[in-house]
Image 1 (spheres, rainbow, N blue to C red):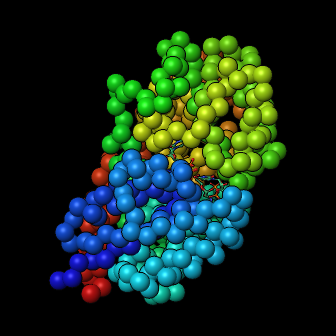
Image 2 (image 1 turned 90 degrees about the vertical axis):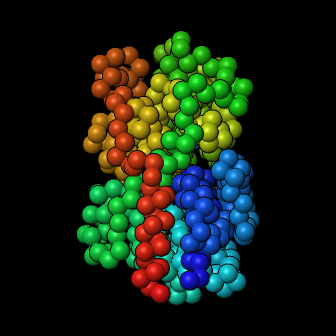
Image 3 (image 1 turned 120 degrees about the vertical axis):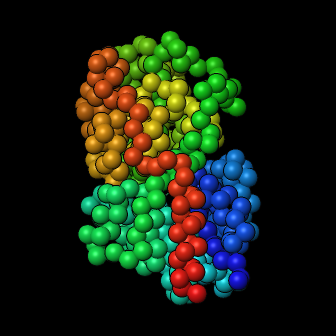
Length: 375
Ligand code: UD1
Ligand code: UDP
């Protein structure tokens, strides 16, 4: 029997973090020929993850350009992945999540009549414009996908409600596979700046922010509230690994002028350092999708700086609070978590609705069964 040719396509940091554990499992199985194509929608932030997991792509479309628009990315991914598919003739193309890489790689597969496997399928916020363009990317990808790997029962139900009921499987999220492989209680950071932070005597707030719908005024409100929090809570220290997007970095530098000792602006942190930084922090404030899945597993309270979430599981469990982007709400919730021990304690419970760390193996077995049934 010929080996199953699996082409995995991804391009941004979160896709890489969640696809690399699966790629490693695929590489280790002799029923499979694993081929990796990175679009490099992100460059440095992607390469850092590839290095950590020691994944060496056979194809690198190297598309990233500063100031790239969604259309720029889409054009390059669609034509680039089309050429790769024609050259390597895969049995199945795997895409992940909800980025422009995801949708356009899936479209390229669809136009070539190659089966599509969607990893992290079925997440929905219910608002097509939020997150933008991710909600649409997920829905459109789901509409042309042949085999759906839904992290949770809620995600499966979202697909069923849309009439997608063939080949939908609950697998957990590979984010937990990645997380469990890197957390270490006695961890020493590679980045010396992080080793010099006093996690014992200060309340470290880990902040990340990058979402398109938060660019501009909402981001300015977030930064205003964070500044007020550290000005009024002398024991609080904010660590802000800034996303590489220049518009966020400029606003951050401007907004935190004069409080640089309390709000430490740093480069994106490499994933193993970042995961262990989450584990050592007091509180996490973020608009990130992936961090909403990781931090609850570590028992860290998360304030979500968005008005909706497609990840309701940890909100229901109490570890994640949907705070929105209103400056007063952010300040009030943050202040309470810094000063009210009881409130902090009720949010600090470890919950892990996203998997047991074995999602990659499950997904691989489902791919093999699916392709065998198609042959
Ligand atoms: C993208 C995804 C978003 C995902 C996020 C994860 C789309 C439309 N957006 O948003 O869904 O949540 O990634 O972080 O698919 N840059 C660098 N180096 C890097 C990465 C980015 O310099 O390694 C800069 C570049 O100037 C680039 C800009 O950041 O043009 C924006 O990158 P882009 O992928 O377009 O958007 P993100 O906001 O990162
Ligand atoms: N992350 C990282 N370094 C950082 C910030 C985040 O390694 O400085 C990781 C984080 O652990 C999570 C992922 O990047 O796994 C989230 O990426 P991002 O917030 O960019 O994208 P999203 O999940 O919102 O799509």
